[in-house]
Image (cartoon, rainbow, N blue to C red):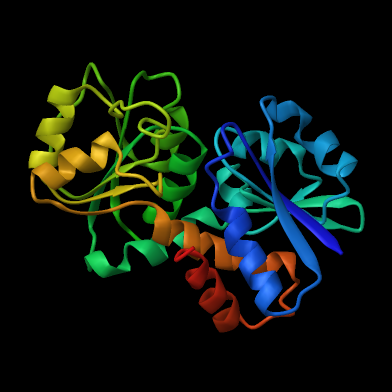
Length: 263
């Protein structure tokens, strides 16, 4: 039996085991998927091999550490330096990023998006911003401080810290921070976020499974919003394909993964 896992801190909330185990069970694939709480991202590689894993997903805050842990990085992950899916290929860790395409799948229903404001400057933000830019979308990034914004400037994004932010009109505002995951806090000061949402058509949160303070505020302003569930599903299908080396049909993976959200 193959063993897969998700690494993160925190990780107890993750739906990934339900999603992947639903696929393995219903499609008779001899594998199991579990959670691994990993406080120290530098120990990812040794923990992966100590558990004899065939593959893993990586969640906050270890996506950049996962990139460093890989022996080879392929596709979009190579461009952004952020890995959320790793596969054991003959004793070598191969890294991929399925987050970005998962998110594009999630926001399709919003229609043509031309202008996006991203809150946060971590691994998820890097992947999403690079993907948005590929599609010719204008991207602005707002982070607490200037320290982590160099990557986004090089990418061609408009960058702001909380201190120098200039408001514009946005088709979509996306929270990629962990604000609201554990504590009831907003991703930026409330007066700033009020102005942002008053000038936005849609709102999306990478966090799933709960109504975050960010989404509550969007709802109070009658803004169409969604949490990260569809992004989670989209990236999960792509990750599962990598785990099973494309031995299962995409539509069947998606079907059983979708059903796991009803559990």
